[in-house]
Amino acid sequence: MAAAAPTPSPFVASTRRFAPRLRSLLPGVAMSSAAASVPNPTSGAGEEAQAPPLPHSTLEIAGARRGLLSGFASLRAPYRAFPVLASNRHVETIFAALTRSLPAVKLRRECLRAPDDGAVALDWAAGDDRALPRDAPVLILLPGLTGGSDDTYVRHMLMRARSKGWRVVVFNSRGCADSPVTTPKFYSASFTGDLRQVIDHVLCRYRQSNVYAVGWSLGANILVRYLGEETDKCPLSGAVSLCNPFNLVIADEDFHKGFNNVYDRALARALRTIFKKHALLFEDMEGEYDIPKAANARTVRDFDEGLTRVSFGFKSVDDYYSNSSSSDSIKDVCIPLLCIQADNDPIAPCRGIPREDIKANPNCLLIVTPKGGHLGWVAGDEAPFGCAWTDPIVMEYLEYLQSEKNSSTKSNIPYDQQGVSEASAPHLTVHVQT
Image 1: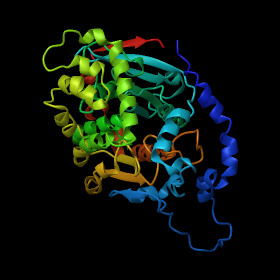
Image 2 (image 1 turned 45 degrees about the vertical axis):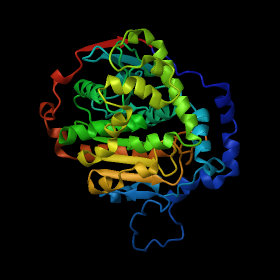
Image 3 (image 1 turned 90 degrees about the vertical axis):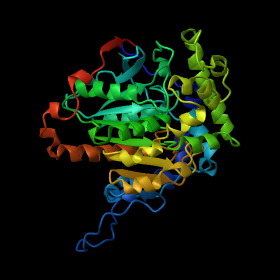
Image 4 (image 1 turned 60 degrees about the vertical axis):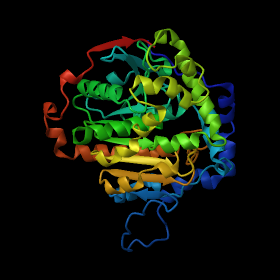
């Protein structure tokens, strides 16, 4: 039986009633994208056709293939953050986290057993196996730290892709979104083993489909690390990275400054909550583990020092951050990758973006918005309570890649020559009703 989406809080529901009123007061914001796509009625019919407009100058665009973005209608209007919210990056970040609407969708859960006896949960949009053709493109979504399929930004992207005829699945890491924890090991910024297993599983199930991935925050860091590890053997057809901290050393430095301590404490609290549900698995752990420190962590760094860095074999928490940054992976990415960042992101600092490596890699593109906060991007037609400004751009990019794939010769290559074999599938699959 599929489970309906959780009912939004009364506060979230009440804020939605004011959205039309706010939009009516600010028609320029609500109509910016639409106005940009309307042709000029005063232009003569005999005039020479003009080249497609470039992405708006309010955006920083970098990458060898940046010219392809000129055809994206979603990038022709200026980036206009919603008034008041744009005045402060923390206001925008918190507003989006608390008031963004949560689309209702029925999900079907599938659990995969990992080789180390751990488990992850895949949440599929229910009914799509019957409704979609077997060769429909598949999109894997990777939420941020402690996030999952019940996060608003994930749901909005899921619904948009699904409305375009894509098959969508959310990859919930160990312990997230009530994903089962069966061993004394969670996940980390450096660990790509679970993602690799999920991708191979999806590819083995949908052999005729092109598979793509989108990651946010820590999920983006893990995704980009995976792309770099796979290099030219990567089986994905394209990927998008959003709010990626990239350089975890720099991100850690900024995490302890000023108001950022609020996010640090909130994420540490979420980690403690997940840990305490499974505390018995960690009894009598030997070696360098500091279980009391992890159980009572006041910061993410405390949790990583007490548990994460030991679980994944790092000498110290600084060693863990230094060797888990996806900024080092960009140069090895061999599939199309779009990175979208906000210049004022408090958690993924702009100075950590590997701009030169992105520019040097012909497979990578970068868009930096002037505002957006972290996982905010309260702008565009659906602001302030709808999807993030990035969602239409992400979907337009993915559809471009899919169209490019459909017109290429890759579709004629036998599956067994595409680098993924039946043997790479997880050795045990468990279906769980939600």
